[in-house]
Every structure is written in structure tokens, then in C-alpha cells.
Length: 619
Ligand SMILES: C[S@@+](CC[C@H](N)C(=O)[O-])C[C@H]1O[C@@H](n2cnc3c(N)ncnc32)[C@H](O)[C@@H]1O
Image (cartoon, rainbow, N blue to C red; front, side):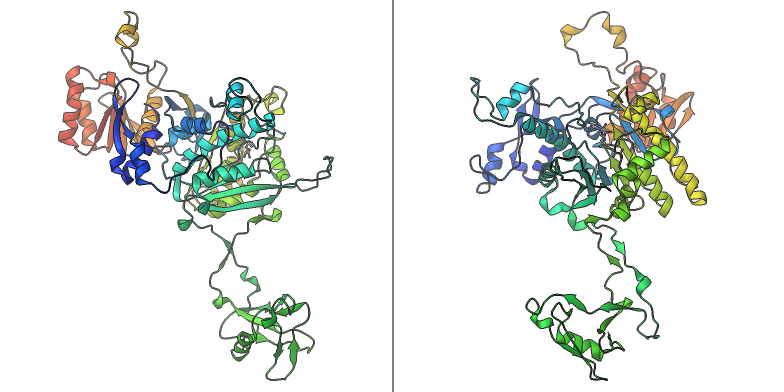
């Protein structure tokens, strides 16, 4: 009941490419395990290895440790919390409370290659927004040695701007493993979109290039986020923009939706049999020197009137092309000899009805930061969260980057704007996108309005936002909102459901025996165990589940018979046979469930006979 060991998975990936470099070694307990023969791998790659310590790379103090921590397994679980959820039985949305690094590790099995779009809005590292609880923040002395401030004899080696260096390194160490784990969850045609400002944009892009590959850098969008200029800086510089960095998983199989061409300007006033057309300017701003081939006179073959290019504007096409267009009656000559000929452009000639999505985000489409603040304040009737993004911005991006049934993940959920935007967009286009929000239960400041209003941590704000926003979206959607999913299942990160039962012989005592009768912690419910198994088996957490009484005990059915679980006491052979007859894909029992030892021994045999395809597990 541990999260996946990602180092082990990496070894498997190398093994798939180079089976001969797989070897064996002993772990700390003396057990044999798979390992890489690195010398052999180096020999295979001879000629293309980094020579010496100079190469093109991006690094910071603590990078190695952050990679190790990102790959190490975790003995934790997600515990369902139906009482804080909405529409628990029906919803396919998730709200997960906990540190996002740990949550991402737990989701590796259930959501591998499943998320079409991720929107991350991490702390921008402005000096007071950066909270995270990873244990890889380098200790001060370790750090100073790392960056070369001091040697082991405490001699200062070179002067570094200490606070600055520490500042960026911690942020990079926070982001790197999260992005690495997030990438595993993206579908092949998936995209990750990350908000950031000037402070860390360079570091973010460098980290993303390392994780996703330079060829997958879709764009760094520019958003004019400030509506009015800032006059507080002594430099008189007003920073009015933010960035949205987007990387695809595999650019070759990805595309944005693009924008529809404005067909309104295509009409057919002269009943041209070729269909609707638009009158397009045939000149472009350029001088004769710049485009000599486009500086000539267009002559109307009927009237003989000539229309010369001028010193500031030349024709947009060469003389030959325009003459061809005149023959095909694709040039409109003006009635007035001082006017300019124009192109008759037919709708049927457009190669696509879609035009590109600009990397410059227009405030008229996405709003400003103030839109987010106003929107949230009006929902709560007070200022409950600083600088939320607006649903206008999120809807615009999600609409472009997702399909109508995508799963959208946000691991820095904050006030849950992403969830709000997903519901809004579904209401608008009838889609069934689902969201997964992850948020640390970070406590609110006692002096804040949020705290005074009873929201003791950010998760409480996020969940309430989704409840309020969902109702509002549904109401505004009217009849269209009937099948809208405005619910969410709450799951909370907690220690594993299993007791630590791996004691050395010398560590057992008489008092422990009673406690060890069950290997499962006393406070864990059936539902806790069910979700622990879903995670462990890599089954999505939003699947519908029901339960049924069979032979007097409760049996859980996840997505029909995808997974059947029974954690009750006294499960006898009759019940096991009854479950086997349903032919489940997977079945799980609890070790202490069986009425007696023969029943426990028989379980595998019963399934082999009645439902040989079923995978059986006992926890
Ligand atoms: C910039 S805010 C996101 C705001 C959000 N986009 C909105 O519109 O409300 C970043 C959020 O990430 C959360 N956060 C920071 N570190 C985290 C972590 N390690 N795990 C989960 N959440 C974290 C913070 O508590 C904060 O709510």
C-alpha cells in the first residue's frame, strides 16, 4: 500500500530500450533488486556522453535532491469524505486536500496518461506567497556549501547574493518534481498551462524545457493583467503583464481549437455563382525598395484606368498574380479613378474556417486581474481570497486546450477558479469536462476576512466556492443546466490505511498481539479501504460505486464489476462463490474477513473455477 516506486518504473523504461544493461544488486536489507549497469549503458552511448563538467544545463542548489524526492514512494492514502462532498454518488469531479507533490504521487496509477489539460497557478515567489512543506529545502549550511559560499574550512569562496540565490533554488526545487510527476498524467495530446510573472518565468521555461522538451513549447502567452498603470514604483515602471507558459506532451499530436473566422463579412450582393465573398485590401504597407516586385500599376482592362502603387503602400501580390486574378474576375475596380482596386475573396477559397489562436491574450477576451477579484467577492459578498484568476481567463484557455469530455487538473487550486470555469464552459457548450482540484489545507490568517467569516483554511474557501458557483451556473443555464455536474468528491491526504506490521522478531511483545490482530488501522472505514485499493490498483477515483448486501455482508461494486470489494467480517465460501458468479474484473478482500482459514485458502481456487479472468487481492 505504497505509491508507485518511480525509480523502479524508470529502470523498466531503460530495460525496454537496452535489456542488456539490467543487472541485480542487493538493497539495504540484503534482498536482491533490479539495477542498471551504468558502465555498460555508458559504453552503449559512447561518443554522445557529456565530457567533463561543462555542458548546456540548468541547475540550482538542491536540484538532485528534488529529483530523488519526486521519485521516492510514499506510504499515504486518500481518504474519502462524503459528508463534505456534493452529489457524492453522481459526480465525476474531485476535490483533493493535501500537498500536491504527495497527491501527484498517489495519482500516478489512476490517472496515468489521462489528463488532457492542466492549469497550474503556483505561488509566483514574490517573497511572501511561497509556502510548501517539502523536506528538501536545503538546510542553510548545506545550501551555503552547495552554492560555494563557504568551503569546508569556512572560507568564503565567492560572494553570492545569498537571499536571492536561496529564493530561486527553493522555488525551482518545489516546481521540478511536481512538473515531472504531472507530465506522466498528461495524455499524449495533452497540454499544461502555467501562470507566472517576470520573477520566475525564465526558470519555469527552463524547467519545462527539461521536462517536456523544447520542441513541445507551445507558446508563452502574454496577458495584460493590470488595467490601470501602477504609479508606486520609484522607477516609474508599471509592470502590467503576466505570462502563461504552455507546453504540450507531444506537439505532433496536439492542436488548439483555434478561432472561427468571422464569416459575417462574406456576402453575395452581386449573386456571384461562386458564392459569398468579401472585399479585401489589395495593398500592404511597404516601400518600393523593400518590395520592388510589388511596386507596379494595376490597369483596368475595360476602362484603361491605371492605379499605381504609392511610396508608402505597394500591392500585396505580384503583377502576374494580379493579372491572373483580373482574368478570373477576382479584382474589384473602384468607380472613382482615385480609389484603389480590392480583392474579391471567396469564402469557398479559404483553406480552413479556423484561424490561429493568438499568443497575445486580449483583455476583451480574458479580462484583467480585477475581474477575478470582483467575481469572487460578489460570490462571497466579501474579499475572501487574494488575486484569484478570473473565470473569463480560464474559460478562454480551457475552451481552446480541452475537448468537451476532458479531465482538467489544477494542483494549485486556491479559490477553485478552474472548477468554476469548467462548470461554466460545460453549461455553455453542453460539454462534460471533469475537474480535479488539489489544494493544501493552508490555514488562513487570523486577521483575514476569510478567517473571520469562518473559513479556517483555503480548502474550505475552495469547496464553498464550487458549491456557490455551481448553483449559480446551473441557475443561469436554465434548462441547459439539467445534466450539468456541479458536484465534487472530497478526498483528503492521510497516512496509509495499513498498520506498520513489519517488525523485527525482537520488536514483538505480548501487548502488541491484540493490536496486530488486524493489519488495518482501527479508524479506517470500508470506504477508506475501497479508495486505498482504487489508488493501489490504478483505478480512476471518480467512477460510480454502489453496494449490495450479499449473504448478510456489504459488498462494494465500482463501475459495475470493474472492481468488487468486500471488507466485512466472516466472509464465508457461499459469499465468495456468489461474488465470483458476478465475474468481476478485480476483487479484493480484507485479510481478516474470512470466516476461517480454509475459506481464505479456498478463495483463489473458487475464482479459478468460477471466474478465472478475475484478479484477486487480499489486503
Ligand atoms: C496563486 S494561488 C492559486 C490561485 C487560483 N488560481 C485561484 O484562482 O484562486 C496558489 C495556491 O497554491 C496553493 N499551494 C501552494 N503550495 C501548495 C502545495 N504544495 N500543495 C497544494 N497547494 C499548494 C496555495 O495555498 C494557493 O492557494
